[in-house]
Image 1: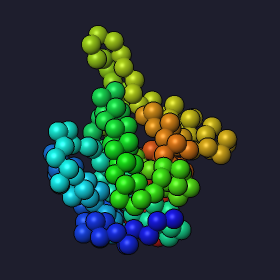
Image 2: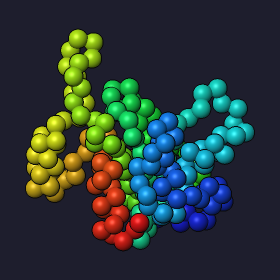
Image 3: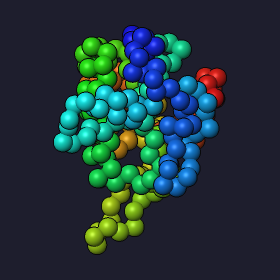
Length: 194
């Protein structure tokens, strides 16, 4: 386990989960939760300040520890998740993992024992596409298909992970979840975090 409070760079960028969930382009928040979290976008900005990089790495929105000491990375996506967005999510995960392990002097193999990743997305903006370039593209399954997948995953005691992010479970993180903003907020309420 990692004690996030031991690192000044994390302590310098504390905010609320609500603030990290803001979609500035639409002036919307994905959660109203007032849980104190680390704004990982700001951590990245401080981390790279003196590196003189040509290409700026990407980063996830938030980082916090739960009551069991697990480190949780959260990325909020209020818009449509398409093939380009999926690639961007994967890059964010890779870049975030490298930055975090460098700051904490830990290894990815350590993260597999205590770190979790949650993608929170807007279900209403991720219904099946009608057409793209003359052919139908389905990034997000229909609600009924999604519910069947979740039910089967539950019976198998496996989480239902979408958008190609299952590859990061047991590779970079102990667990990976893809949750609608409603599911995310319900889970926060169920465990008493709001």
